Image: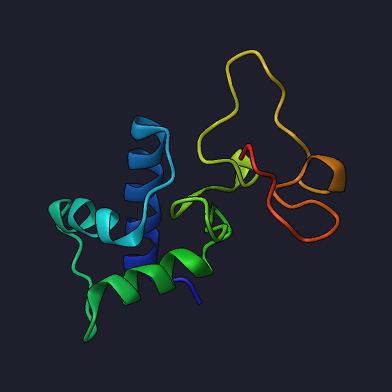
Length: 107
């Protein structure tokens, strides 16, 4: 079930990601979302926020890549360079991990 808070968080985070063009850890996202007037409840608000973002199909959080980004970035730390086509997410040769499950060193 998607609630109103989750939708507001998603909209705010898409706005921030499109402006900053880089993946960001939850601890840096939280003040931005709160400044938008979105109340994050829970004992540890950063964990609640991470839970909301993790459940959304609009964001990814690839371990070792610096936090949440947009899924259309295909695991990159930032959007594809201008003039390059987005990589299909189902292409194992060009995804965030290699076939052996390791991240490439130049990522």
